[in-house]
Image (tube, rainbow, N blue to C red; front, side, top):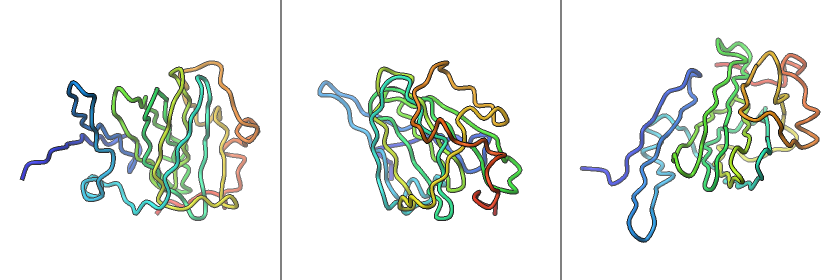
Length: 190
């Protein structure tokens, strides 16, 4: 049986974090894409179930993150519907061999990429296009009491953001460095 849609799954340097390139079918009327199909994504290593979908719209230079949730961590399958972002995942799991390491990729409507950020990782993005309409599927419900944030420019993590000037929320601007967080607030590597 042939599949109408295909996707390319690329393993990153952080085990479990996956870059997914989706097929798009164009014709004179526009295009069509399949952005989620449970069976194919499970086969690729994207573990659901997903219980919440979120959408954010941001202007050029907005940086959101680095956010995480613990306990009750969230896995996130992120996509850009309009515009472009630089999207980042950071391993913050206590005891992980890649603790404090990061990966970052440009996601846009043009390159049709998604990033799978498993539970236990911090996540953030900055808008490199004029605007961005950013979508993410979550494996757990948002719990404000479990929310945590790591400083976006933590020198020990060393993320190479593509913009020199960014616009931050008060929460993100005042976030602690990873080493300043109580280790009990961080997820555990299993």
